[in-house]
Image (cartoon, rainbow, N blue to C red; front, side):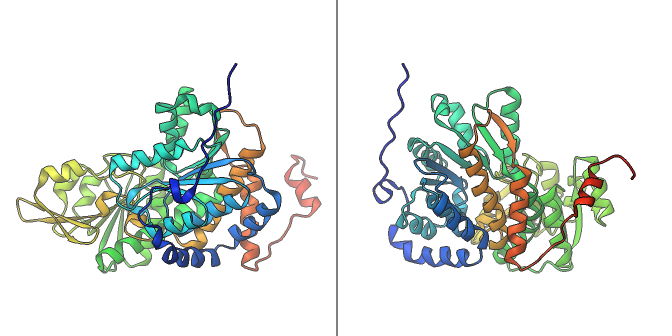
Length: 427
């Protein structure tokens, strides 16, 4: 007869693996600033305190650990959950915010600049808390569960996935029949990809690039590799900053869309010759490899806005370089034999978080409201293993909450209009 595993008792101060708890006061200022501009999470926190949808549950969250995600963790905690967090990217971790979370009762396993070994150890420690529900970003937590701890998957009721890369990995698992619990694809909700992916990525990528390089964008050429929703946002903001924009794509429909949106389209190798800034945003690997790198002009700036640091080939950069040095914080100079220099930002990691503060607060308020409501949905419904969409009603609820927070009213269909839209008859 199977026995229910005994969950360890968590003590955030004792069990956390963080940089320094003394940073909590500084982190609390960031946390509180973000909270002031996240009215949706404030409403949900108050609602969850009354409803207690996560009472008796332990929730593991693997996200970029900064002020906005910290407010999501505290919202889940307000719903009765015991919450533990780990970072989904070592360079995006803000140690002061992590300390503030621990100070507020959340167990944390994260330090800025963690080595790959430390990063994996933090995920292991997060899973050691024996969660019932999870929130993942990029799929590393779910992958580790299935590859290293398949016996623990039976303890997971389900969870939510934040980003495109993670959803793609989940869909591959579901197609193979290896995904053992339900996961909501938050990334595929309209209130996520239309706003977070497009406007959030568009603004935060250029914020990360500009604050890191202190270079002008106007009058230069920006090459954007990938024209999904994130790529659309990056291209839109580059155009708004005064850049000439070139799009690189493998999807003919997206390439056609880019042309119709007024952008030039060409292969990566050709586009690289023109690039003052080259930004990858595909969710795939080896998008900029040796042939494109060899085409880069002197002074080109390379940045990645995809989840993993595999879109720009760092092995090819190192193989072509005769010297590599750090010339400014988050900027590595690769010098080639002919004297050309190219500059890689944030080690090729997610530039908007590794070299900036990530998406604007108000945009992430939308996404994290979806995360909170999505996780409540998983907690309250018996879903089958696999990848599930966010219910349309939750998507619309978040949009209406945002509009109300802005004081905006919209029209409603009359009963006659609703009947007309649902009927094939003309009268």
